[in-house]
Structure formats: C-alpha cells, structure tokens
Image (cartoon, rainbow, N blue to C red):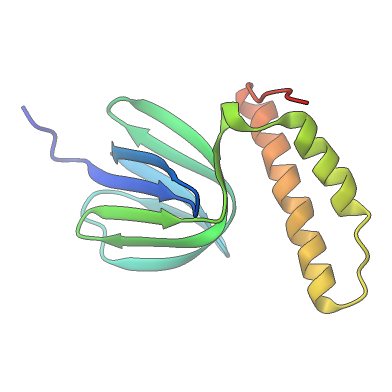
Amino acid sequence: MARNDTFHCSVITPERAVLETDATFVAFPAWDGEVGILRDRAPLLFKMGTGELRVESPEGNQTLFVDGGFAQMVDNKLTLLTEQAKKIEEIDAAAAEKALTAARTLPMVSDAAFAARQHAVKSAEVQLHLVAKHGGGSARH
C-alpha cells in the first residue's frame, strides 16, 4: 500500500544534490525562526538561515547542517537551495573549531564586516553543536 502522507524533499548545494528523499516532516531554519513542513502545505518561499535541518522519512530520520539559501514548497515538493549542506557525519569538528577561532578574530571595521563575522561565528557554533548533540563528525586533518 502506497503512503499518502509523504512529499518529496531535495537539498541542493552549488556542488551537488545532498539529499533526495520522500519525507513525512521537515523542519528547517528560516532567517527568523524554524519552519515545519507537512504534506499538502500551501505553497511557500522562505529565506533560510543557518542551522539544523531535520528530515523525517519512512526510511528513518536525518539531520543536516545548512547554511542559508532558500526553501520552496510547491505541489508537495520541498526544495532547499543552500550554499552549504552537510550530514552530521560529514562535519569536521576540528575544522569547525578552527573556523570558530578564526571567526572570533575577524575585524569589525564596517557593518558588512560585522555581519560576516557574526555569520562565520554562528556557522561554526551550529556545526559544533550538531556534532555534540548527535555524535559523529570526523576528525580529518
């Protein structure tokens, strides 16, 4: 018997399609909070933030790190276009620690530099949080 509570979810970066699956629920970080998606959701277009993407599917749940972009839901197809998406096991904890240290030393000589620093700090902090929360993360050097 075919399930009728799923919709298609695609997570795409400029380099590759990171995830293609049927989902029963997806929660993604919007620029101003978290958005949850179920089947038959009215069409939407959101600016995404940096954070945790949770995908629940009949095959199991997945958690990814996403870094900005856009989310569009149309005709039971959710497409998340993002600059960066990583599964938890793809996060390099040592690299995230280095990135956080470097981000905290970035100069804040203009509003744009301040915004860039804030984004870099948040990106590294979220990756480290996800590794701590879900385990995994590689220690590549």
